[in-house]
Image (cartoon, rainbow, N blue to C red; front, side, top):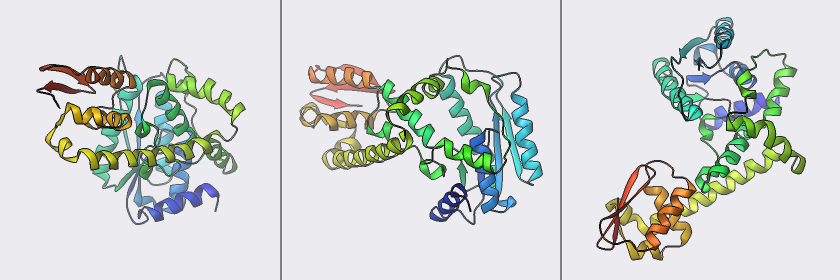
Length: 300
């Protein structure tokens, strides 16, 4: 058994997924084709279903859909697909992620899948960490993504490509992956090759660092819960107690009360406001949450 197939089998065993139904996200690219191939080696076809989303972002995107559908037909796997009717004008990649999540969950519910698996790998993780660093991210933003759905999360893309070549798999190349108007593609095309000249084993280093950040995030969460459990439940804390917290816990506190992860700039602006000891009825918005100060209390 190849290393990739062995790792996938170990993932199924450790996650107690060997006797369940799974939905695989398959775009038709090399990563997802490898995911489908190793899944077929480890599980029966009736345990598997595939979901494909046509983003409708290029003229020949239908070729990918047909390719994936043919793969499923050949292997007797239930196939689900959706096509986006319109293109978002802003936050394109974030909008696509939300639609993939929503539509794939709909397919998973129909199939009765226990889990939705994706082919995200360590090179994706490295790109994500670099991207988030450029926007400002705390330890949580630099921790691994949800590894319970990503059997290849600590494996470099090159390993998957080698597997596909050795097993003579066919896949579709997405030309939009070369379009550097998307920031992630720019990181992939220009930043990663430059960094590999400094650190050839880049993915190994970033995987290890992401685990370190996850441990740090866990520690901060524990400390915050220990120090401010009552205040977080009551949605109110005295301004003095907040300002007496360690700066790292002040950041963590604000991230905890925000509805959406705030940028570093938002956090710094909010902290500057609070450290200037604002007077009553002063308000500030942070990550979709409205913060206010009244009678020397911070509330939200």
